Image (tube, rainbow, N blue to C red; front, top):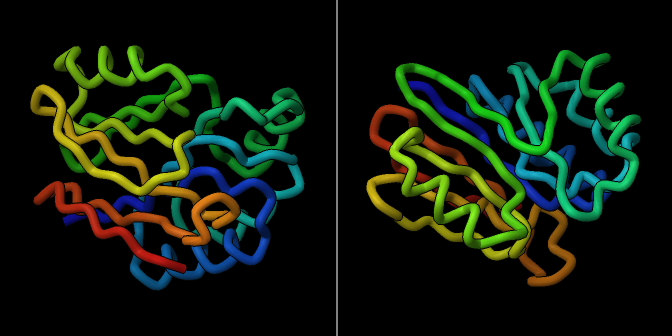
Length: 164
């Protein structure tokens, strides 16, 4: 069993990021996946305490993409508009999810068992064409009042949504 930490829409909420990193570390997460809307590059620095690798994507409010990319390289993270990950036999992908048609097309492509997305700020888990589509919700808590992240078990594909 390998655990994957899922987070999205951190929007510079440093306290929430610190809590998420602490929780991921305490649960021995082997990979963290960030589905975008980090906001400023300084917020990414808060992930440096992670005891695992991180793969992520840009969100629609991430304006300083060059600086985010530089910061990710400094920290040994991967970040782009779209990323894939393989872990414990699990094929996954991450996209911010601004266009629902692209989210659905990726889920239906048959290439991924798990698709991580953000953007809506609403925690959700759904199955689309045999693909588990997970939105960990908003870590920042700004729109819904709930600061949520998720942990995925790569073996059972069970997703646990956790309120910070």
